[in-house]
Image 1 (spheres, one colour):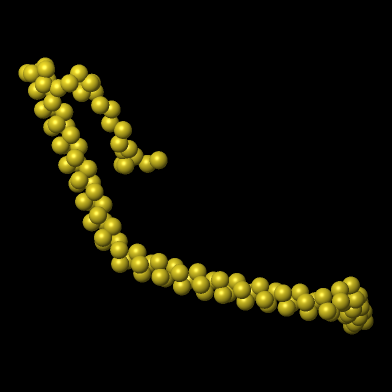
Image 2 (image 1 turned 90 degrees about the horizontal axis):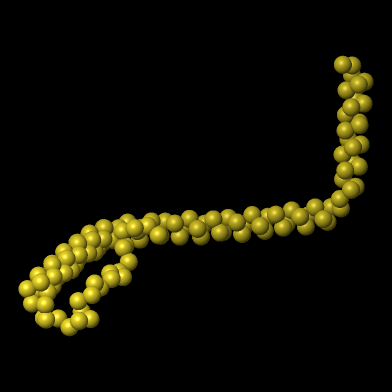
Length: 123
């Protein structure tokens, strides 16, 4: 490639650059640049707030995770205890009903439907 071709390409690219500059006014470019900087600042502020919130949430969760685990074990234990108690009560009631058929009123003899939600099944 000769030096004259290189010079003509350079002049051509400069001319194209000048033409592009005339398509958009400098005020519009400055306004656009200002808006982009404003948006960037807001996004950086939002990011800082979210980072702070995540750190705070992580700290709070670390403090209460042990309590949550213990309470979960207690609730499961209470549930199994209550299930056992209700099973024993049904067994006792059926034994009493077989031995003494007149011990309970008629409407109490029918099976009671357990309407409690099963908390161990995912919804």
